[in-house]
Amino acid sequence: MFRQLLRTANERLRLFLSERGRRARVIRDSLRRQRGRIEPSSRFVSGFRHAYFESEARGLVLLKEWLSPEQFAQYDAKSYFEVTGCYSGKRYRICHGTSMNIYELDGAGRPRVGLCFVPKGYLVSGDVILAQKIALETDERRALTVANRFFSCFDYSSY
Amino acid sequence: MATQIVMDRTGDTRHNFDAKNADALLKAEERFRELTGAGFTAAVRTASGEAVVKRTFDPNAEETLFFPRLVGG
Image (spheres, one colour):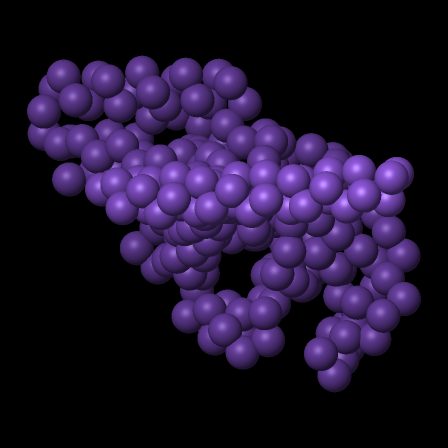
């Protein structure tokens, strides 16, 4: 008796779910046919990704416009370029990135100490790098005053 | 046509203006003062390609770049 009831309930549940599934497919298909409708799954992620890459690309275009030909060639080949501090004449290596991406170089061109300073607020990497370059080339002392230092233990000579 | 480029989260925002137009020039100078007053640094490029920081508005600058105040990272 109990088994019979269970079997009937199970059958009804299966029919109910099947009917609901069918209705859901009908509604989904009719929505897909609507003109100009944006797929929910791509509405946010795709738009965000597009805007993000567009901003990054714009930042890199601006950076490349402001790099000297030598810096541009170096950055293009190695993802970093070197600048000369306007005050001390020291050489600095600015790597692609948005933080902890500057190294003061020793006489042999090896990273001696890491420097970290960035423009305030969220900026794309190209903008950050360009601001760092201009700061070191035009107002080195001010840049060094705000910079935090970190120990550079990596050998970038073969980078 | 002169341009003021302001770095922001979208990459940059460009304000083009006619440097021969007195009203446009005045507006550009006002923008310069607002941005530098808010802590932005203004830089222009020389003919040789070197960047030079500007503390006052340069009406002859073809392209002026503004980036926010630097902070320790």
